[in-house]
Amino acid sequence: MPRFAANLTMLFNEVPFMERFAAAARHGFSGVEYLFPYPFAAADLAAALKEHKLTQVLHNLPAGDWAGGERGIAVLPDRKAEFREGVAQAISYAKGLDCKLVNCLAGIAPASVDAGQARTTLVENIGYAAGELKKAGIRLVIEAINTRDIPGFFLTNTSQAAEIIAETGSDNIGLQYDIYHMQIMEGDLARTIEKYLPQIWHVQLADNPGRNEPGTGEINYPFLYQWLDQLGYAGWIGCEYKPKGETEAGLGWLKAAGAAR
Image 1 (cartoon, rainbow, N blue to C red):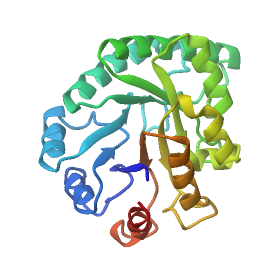
Image 2 (image 1 turned 90 degrees about the vertical axis):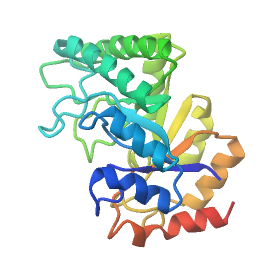
Image 3 (image 1 turned 30 degrees about the vertical axis):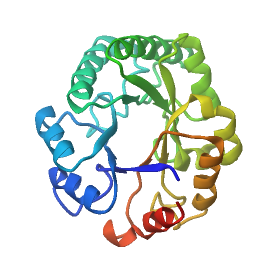
Image 4 (image 1 turned 180 degrees about the horizontal axis):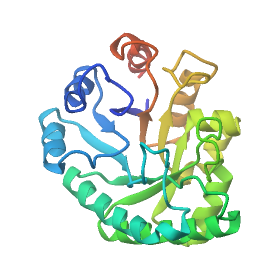
């Protein structure tokens, strides 16, 4: 059975962020991820990880003005300097947290930037990030996201993301495969995972519709867990879903998955 990491941005919102590490460990998670570590001191986050014997699995590169609606800046030609500053900041945090994987959100290309220019900018930026991260012993992933939740997001499907990775020529960029997003955008989950497995370095889950716990929607997660095992997937699965109620009340799926080990 795959290893599950609690996404602390999404789960255990009943308590303040720094208390979510304890909650995750108490409910059986051995790994955590979250969108951004940057509002907190790396030393404080590292102390929480150590205290609760948790692995920091993943965090994102800085993604611009999140509160203002930005969802990444890697496709923005006029923000390259800011992007590179963000790479340095992400490396500093990842080192402090012993985090070996960082995700880059491509972003939403404005109408003033054509698709070709956005793609060229993205290839350049992630190629740069991958090189800098590799020097630090950290890997980079990029993620396709559905355009229902984030209209205009530049990366929308697995084949597009794989093509862009190939264009960089880097061996330090993989795919973050989000089952929820890709169920919406392309379906055929099992075969897509099988086809791109060598490039899939991280997986995330939520059910559809609603982006809630596994078992609340149409996705056959017990089958996919077995499928990932059968294929030999050795990475983590980040639990990036919105609990329908209190987080603890919705963790029956995790207990059932554990019982199936």
